[in-house]
Length: 125
Image (cartoon, rainbow, N blue to C red; front, side, top):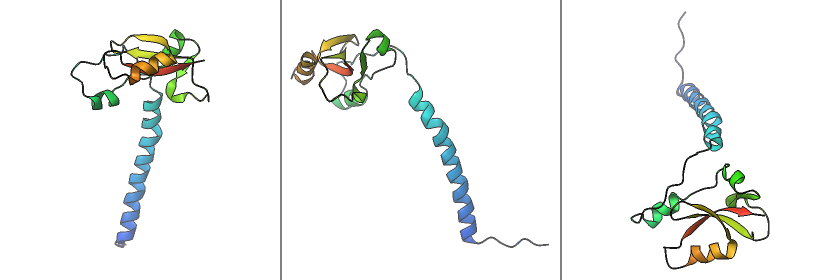
């Protein structure tokens, strides 16, 4: 018994189904694992020779461990309160973490001098 030759539509459907299944498996396992992973380690200071683009891309972010170090504070990106936080957690240029008044952090972040720049990563109740 001889098998019939498959049409182009059948071959295309099979290859798309197989690649779609592979794509779904990668998305189902790789993406959640990356989002849930906690990247630990010390903060790295910004060097004097870094460009503004690299500073915008490689800025410090909130980590779960900071919640223990700063009770009552949470990730600034997830701050959902409609009020401005009284204090925030900032990262200084040297990599040190500090709790600071919101107004002071805003003044430093928007000042023309880069010497006193801070990154605001957390908001406190």
